[in-house]
Image 1 (cartoon, rainbow, N blue to C red):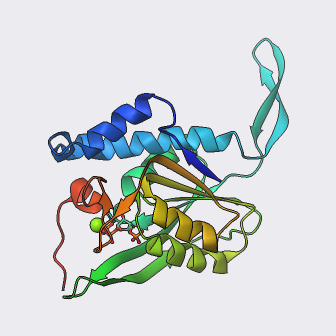
Image 2: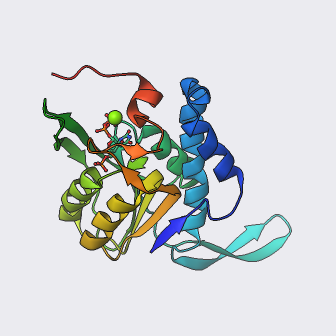
Length: 216
Ligand SMILES: O=P(O)(O)OC[C@H]1O[C@H](OP(=O)(O)OP(=O)(O)O)[C@H](O)[C@@H]1O
Ligand SMILES: O=c1cc[nH]c(=O)[nH]1
Ligand SMILES: [Mg+2]
């Protein structure tokens, strides 16, 4: 299932406009915070699909029957561009465990690239909701490799993918491999360049959040 959070006008469409804008996106603090709050809204929406249980709470004046999350999710993030979205998810799922995957596109001279994955840390996933943040779902190669690796830690009860900008081709690639996953995108673009950049997209999310990186 794919959820496009720009289906309706809302603060999400405002924030998407700001992360795309070639001038506004230069403000790194605002860029990271916009990514963070997009993830916060996605966390709220995803929370409606998690299992809840009834709990009796003693208040100073009596008792109240409330609904609380039954099983805390595991929040996974692909470094480095995913870090601001991870913070956003953690702001809302404040009791969750976290998983981290270090992966990046290793570019070759001919313009092609492959995904290098170096480090992963993850708690047991069996029977738990898994929410993975990757701000740019371009070809989907990073996300697919990350999910394939994460599933060695157990089969989650639910898989939710949170992206700021997802492109149709990447969504199709991910859906083919993980049809059970829900994709929550702040917006969806149609075009992918030969070098795997989303158009109109926003540029390089990792560089915009943290600065450019040297590649050896
Ligand atoms: O869907 P894909 O084609 O795999 O592309 C998406 C990936 O590319 C970006 O990471 P990048 O490799 O630029 O690393 P960074 O976070 O260090 O900038 C982005 O954060 C995704 O993880
Ligand atoms: O457009 C894109 C594609 C991958 N990664 C990015 O940061 N931007
Ligand atoms: Mg990058």
